[in-house]
Image (cartoon, rainbow, N blue to C red):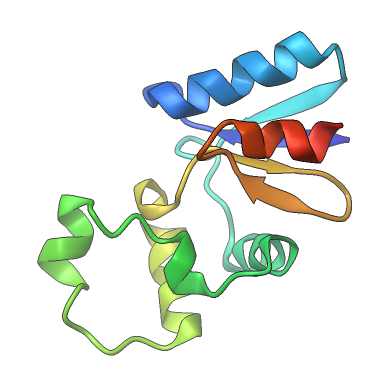
Length: 114
């Protein structure tokens, strides 16, 4: 099953949702700001994304700049921070059973669903 971690207020996330809708494939939407990801779920996504936690952080967010940017944080601390502050997670993320991609650019989503 394909899943999109979606933020309705994000243009790129809405574009990703449109790509999935146009694909005709069955998928599930998780509004991760409402249904927050656990630390374990974030760690599992990072494995599928094949990236370090810092790469999943939206480092241009005011919250990040004001509270975390200049701190030396471990991977586990970064995961906890994202679980506590889901708006810091890159979006959209599209996940399948074996792989995940960040839908920036949106063409990344096409790679995972084709």
